[in-house]
Image: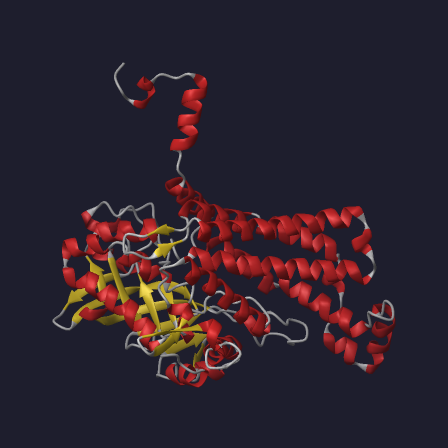
Length: 484
């Protein structure tokens, strides 16, 4: 089925415990910090019912219509359609949102690829992951992730740390397992469920086995507490911060205070080999929509910079064109990796079609590592007025507004209000607290840079370059470990 926006908003009115800025939230969907982004998610649901979008955002299977965002991919066409669906969503809402479900559901597909590993400990666990993948298709929940534990002192052996620093099982019952600990997750406070999984650790020590747990947690379940960072929405006038007030995806410390996880929601438990599998393959599908968001973010930077240059005709200068070309090369580099990852897609162990792993992870490194450089290039093109422009109230006030109208009007095409709007948008994209937060989010939301490089290392085929050099340099086969 496909849910409506109203069904989604009603679904998160389940009595969940949510805190933000020291305040206990009674209605997440209406609270100033959550209402804009919850509305964006609701809009995503509603679009699937509209005639203008339904064919692009849904598919029919067995006589039932389902969300394309939740469809496990088996063909290249599935991936092209998913790309198109994200394009339509972001164009409709008018900005970039990352955690709306389509980029996190793929983490369960990755675990399904390791079903043989799950079967080694208990066949029901592999069945559970298959059942949940199907459940997501049929019920269309807002499904997120739960990855990052509180840090604690990682220099100390696991037996010497506060055990709650990593999610662990404290009791096993006939109804399921009981877990304690905490995870950080974006969007958890207004999501339906999260896939909780292990993160840090080599997962080679049996002392870690209590922490090697993977499961589905309902975000409104008893014992689940959401302690959110301060929100950007509602902090300032939307006219001054148009992105922060619409697209802040609130991050949450999700505390699990003796939460019962029914056995049917458990994917693995006390199994370090499964934890190893999760860490090695977690993003083999989800990296694609994640990198795709950065393609759209590049478009925002290019558009803001180009409009700023066009205001005064500066786009005619060679130096300006070169910087715009740098932004375009960054954007097209991301697009090239995404296109190639679909074109050279690979069949997964579970029979799904996964984007070419080497190309996808290399594209993620490009998109994430070069983002700070490209943001600086866009700031240089836009100029220092994003730092000094007064807020919208000053433009509206009769005493100050007349002077601002005079000095911010450029010509017949660019009146003061359009110029103010562009500068406010550019500031929120590149120079505000929200912009800084988004930059840090991109750098760490799918692990830090060294882990991104490790994924490239694991998935790149070094055999071709090695053989090319061996033959070109005339090396013997002895270097291959073979006898003379």
